[in-house]
Length: 239
Figure 1 (tube, rainbow, N blue to C red):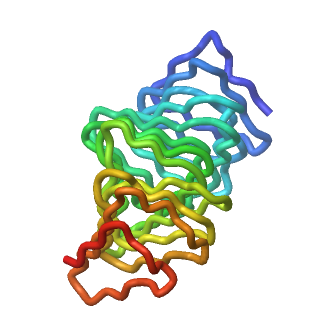
Figure 2 (cartoon, rainbow, N blue to C red; figure 1 turned 180 degrees about the vertical axis):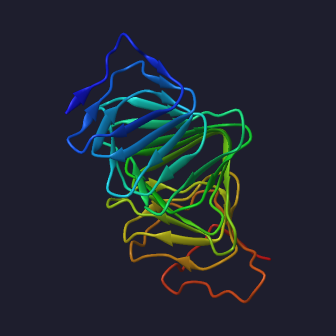
């Protein structure tokens, strides 16, 4: 195993190719590409582009923040621990790769937006600080909370958002959904804005959802069926 020296804190491109593993430090910066080619790289730092190769692992230091200003390509494994990944680029960014990335906390703070090129899951909190998280035709799994400041999300009609919290009370955000999935627990619908569904609504078996002041709109371009196990709406629009 190797340790990166804290006295050399800034790299242009940095490749980690040690099967026994490499450990970074807080304050490490890469201006170009961080590539984890082999082994496990444990880090909490500031990067432009991130690439995790097949068989390699990027592990977030416990409780840390990883800042990413470029693109994220995960073909291996990302271990989020209890850290935060913060996308804060000045150009449009993409989260891609052949592997599903599971984040702990994920913050989107890019006025030009972040697009999904692969499926992602978030175990703790998704914060949409600025710009749009473009789901496209991919799947976003939310295992906990979503917080929207000045940001938003968009989805194609065949994109999916799965509110997958395993306890009652998960809040649903207003916005434009493709397919919308609820886990088998009670949800809290938004008291302002509209939950717009262009695809399929799978309501789960929770029942007893909090509906105060909420509006649900079905606005698909092909025929839609309302789920039989979601029987009560506050406001319902068919469009």
